[in-house]
Length: 188
Image 1 (tube, one colour):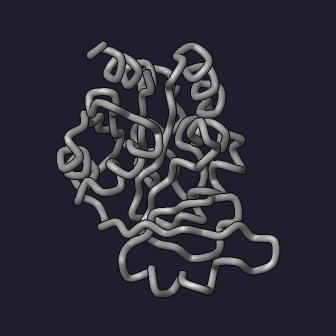
Image 2 (cartoon, rainbow, N blue to C red):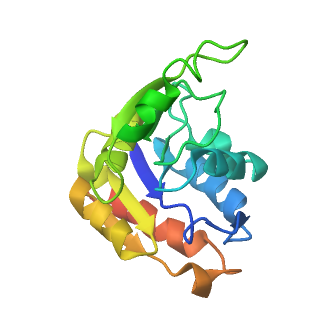
């Protein structure tokens, strides 16, 4: 059974492109090892390339991919080409900007775009759940730090865990992930 823990980016996973939790990579790796079918994703109104770079720099990119190797990231601001993503979610006003400009050039993979509304429409979380193979909304929890994040979870019909990035900086991520894992496994 697939389960998804999705994060908002700014203020939840990162502050100024630095991890909020010093033990983030270790805790996420352990959670996946201990919980078969657990996947992580990011739904953010922020920059896709910043999110992708953050995941790469912190050596957690494989944890944010589905079984087919697709990155589980949905964002609303596309600022540069992302070469290793086959399908990405973009807001409707970017579809025209991406067509022909970011596809089929050199050794880049073709990028197929999906038009999503910004948070709090629920589109970003529904996109991630679809890509992660989530069959029941109860198998997803969204972690965020502001009201638009709780509204996104509500719109998608999934559970929400609120965090305060400024208060939790430098603390362990383990209690948060343990709570989230309990939330997505409690229905089964």
